[in-house]
Image (tube, rainbow, N blue to C red):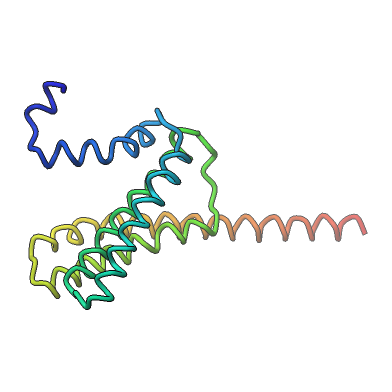
Length: 169
């Protein structure tokens, strides 16, 4: 055990060990596919199983906590995929409609966490949306700007192509 881990709480050590594969993929040391399918889908399946069991047993508080955990883990996976693609693999950053699939959960996570903190009267949870709202807004603005640029390029290319075509006739 490293000296750094020795000074951490037992919970921090368990969380560090649990998220080690994701962290290695985040740094570009481990392949993302293995982490996503091996751990992401597995962990998500367990969270869904616990949620369904809580639903069956009508345990509202556990349902809320499981939804929060699932959302938090989903955000982690989405951010890891984005980081791996553009920062590790160095793909060119161009707008794609799938970006809406990534930014929508950010806003829903923020809203859901805020509502969960109110419904369960857990003010410490309100800290997450208090700051995460800025991440969600920034992601939406970047995605919207990418959409505007993409639409502008398509219109510009179409107009230029039509003018070129009309000049040849």
